[in-house]
Length: 212
Image (cartoon, rainbow, N blue to C red; front, side):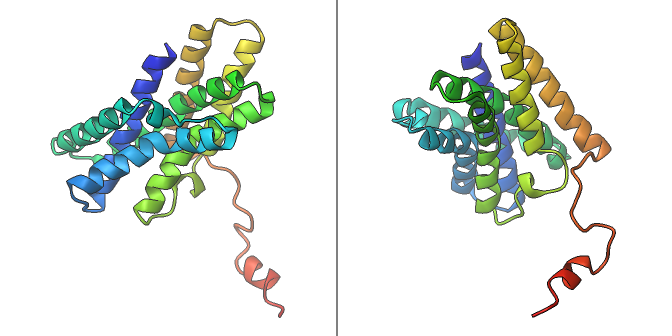
């Protein structure tokens, strides 16, 4: 099942990258590049941190072709959509939670501590989108106010907790996927966010740094 989830995740993230590139008026090469970086970037960062070589897409170069195809397909389908932003957010949410689960599974197989496992899940889920936004010269989604990295952490923690208590891997995957996706959509719809330091106190940050 995780292989199927992986293909869904890289397709979703490649699509989100392609839509971002289109909104930035990039050409076909830019669309394919940003889509590929978004889809494969999170796993690459995770594998480098874990010392897991060769990287997944190096060992399986067919994933490059798959992500390029998914990015171009999303770009073509986007011409039929009136609201690119909604499509982007849905694809990004799906990729976020799916990659979080996959990242946890890969890290757990490496034998690291469970806290590191959950952290690697978050990195897998968010790093691709972070690279996408940096390449597209915009504030990364992970640094904005609505819940994003928190969703990845919660998804990974739920997945690992289920495995710890003996829930079957397939069931745990589906439950974590549904819960994480639902939480991300709820955060978007209801503007759920973490507290912002200094908010509601105009000039507080200026005052704190005002003394030379």
